[in-house]
Each structure stands twice: as C-alpha cells, then as structure tokens.
Amino acid sequence: MAESTNRDTPEQAEFRQHCREWLTTNVPALPDFKPVNNGAEVATDEHLAYYIAWQKSAYDAGLVGCDYPSEYGGGGRTRCQSVANQEMLRAETPIFPGIIGLGMAAPTIFFHGSEDLKKRLLPKLLRGDELWCQGFSEPGAGSDLASVQTFAERKADNKWVINGHKVWTSTAQFATWMILLARNDKSDKYNGLTYFVVPIKSELGKSVTVRPLIKITGETGFNEEIFEGLVVDDSYRLDDVGKGWTVAMTTLAHERGAGPLTTPTSGGQGKSDAKEKQPGSDTNEFPLLKLAKNCARNGKPAIDDPVIRDKVMDMMIRQVGIKQNRRLRSVAGLADRQRLTLQDKLLGTEYLQDAAALALEIAGAGGTLSQFDVDAPDGGKWPQAYLSSFGGTIAAGTSEIQRNILGERILGLDKSK
Image (cartoon, rainbow, N blue to C red):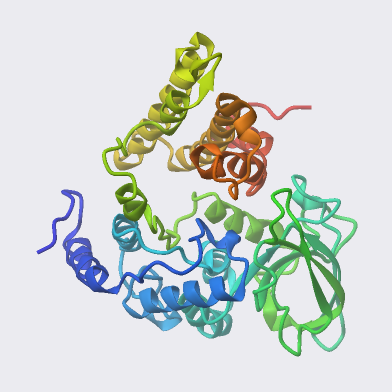
C-alpha cells in the first residue's frame, strides 16, 4: 500500500493509495505556455482548454468533490478531499481553473440550494463543465459588503428582475454562472439581501454585459458586469428571501478556508523541472537570502549590508512562524480552526507582500527590470509579485476586515465605534 500518515482513517489510507497510483501516470506534461499559479490567472483560451482538461481528468478519477454526496456528483467519501489535495500537491499537478466554483459556489449551493439546484449544478461545476464567478463587490461596496445596491425586484409571476453593477470579478470572462448577492429591500441593510445563482453567458443571461479590467500588472483577469433587466426564476434563489447575508457568510467562510467543506486544490506544476535547470544550486535556500547574495550593493553582495541582512533574517523568522502556526491544524482541540484559517490568510498575504517589497529593495535598480529582460534578477519575478500581492491583501476581505473578524468574532473584543 502507499505510505499514509498515522492520522489516516482506513478509508483515507485506501484513498491515498488510489490517488498516488493514479497520479503516477496521469499528471499532464508541462504546457507550451508558462504555467499559472491559480485559477484567477487563467487568461487565454489556450490556458482554459489545458486546465479544464486537467480538472475533468482529476474529477473522473475521483480526486475532485470527494466529500460531496454521490447524488450531487461527488465521491460520497468522508474527509478525503484533503488527502487528494495533499497528493496532488506532492505530485506537482496543474492548478484547477474552476476555483471560484469549487471553493465558493459549490459549498454555498450545497448548504443553501434546493435539491433541484444541487443535482443540476454541482456535477457540472465539480467536473469543470461549467465555470463560475462571484458577484459580490460593487463600485460602492467592497469591504462593506452589506452595502451592495444591485437590486433584485420580485415580480408577480415568481420571477426576479436584476439591475446593477458588479466589479473585481475574477474569471467572469470564462464563467457561465455567477453567485450573486443582491438587494431586495432598500430599507434594511442586512436583512434586505437575497442570494441567487444566475446564468451570465446563456440566452437567459443576455442582459449581462461582462467587461474586462486591466490590472496594474498589465494583465486581465478581473472584470465588471452590468446587469440590465436580467430575469431569473425564483428557483435560482438560495435560501429564503432576506437571508442573503447569512448565505454570503457561508461563501466567505469557504473562500477564507474556514468552512466545513474542504476545497479541491492542486498545483506546484513545474517546480521539479525548475530545480533541475539549476544544477549545483541549493534549491532549498531561502529565496531572499539567495537574492541578497547575488545582488551587489556598494561593490559587495547585498547580504553584507547589515540592514539588508537584518531584514532578510526577519522575513525568514516570519516564514518559519507561519509554517509552525499551520502545524497547529493537526493538533485536535489546540486552537480554534476558524482562527487559524483567518490568521493564515492575514499573515500569509501580508508576508508575501512584504517579501516582494524587500526583494525589490535588495535588487535596487535591477528591481525595475521586467520578466522579459534577460538581466532581471530572478527572472524579473519580484516586480510582478509585488504588484500582484495587493490582490491578496484585498481579496476575501481586506487585512483590516480580517483583523476586525479575528478581534470581534474569535477573541470576543468589543466592536470599534
């Protein structure tokens, strides 16, 4: 049998063996383009075709949706998705393009959708036959999500007419469905919200205009959507009218990794190949330390500068601290699971941003060179990493919002006035 952890149940141990055996011969070859790191970076039809094929293959092998009931297209297993995730990451597989659907739409539909919606939508979602996007943020409602103004008006024929404007929507250019938080009552901020699943690319969704937004990196990925009289049946509503805020909390809990269902994740593609291209190098060396050794400052390696050296050591300490914090997940009852997840998101995204900023400081003038310049330190990845890092500290709730949640809901502190 395949090696398993001491904490595996018999079902998990058997499933781990299946995952390893299948992954041995079914991990796709590297694509002709540079692999992307997450579903939000999927930008071309070529990207989409490659990554959807991988998601469908993994789903057909039982590695996606393992813990969902079989009647909804899942594997009917218990706590096995985390095993599949571990084995896919170990095998350095491609990423899944349908991460919005897998990580947010699927659990929300599962916990709040009707039987018909679950049976109709979840199998195609899990397999990657239909991609999803998230319609939460608006030009005037980002961190204050309860202020959304996209309006859903209920008609006498059991239909809803939706008008409004959503923004910062990842992968909407490819999505066929959207999870949508809309206002049905303008007089009640929290209880006047209702949650829907809506088609945005079918004949039914022809009243939705999707427009790309160009990020500071020059890439696409985000979009805005204009709803002009989109008509949907009441059967597309999740949970009761006015319960949209409650449903949205289920979405956000899973987006932040704190929900009861584990999101299917994979990735790490090309890491081994990258190591093989650098024979003789210490592939485990801390990236900022290696950069500081290779970049010059006043005619000497930057690492000889005591200020730079102290900053690099500080980042190394932070990295170890974050890794050790994640080990607490495996210790039953040691810490609040939601606290650990929210803490991971807060500390991890701020660490990545600070690490990229320090890398640019170390590189000096070389930090202005792009990834297309052969002289760029570390292949020019740091300018891109720094510019992209702000998406991480904003998405799924800004760092300020995360601190409020940790303080008020986890630590029980008073709300600020």
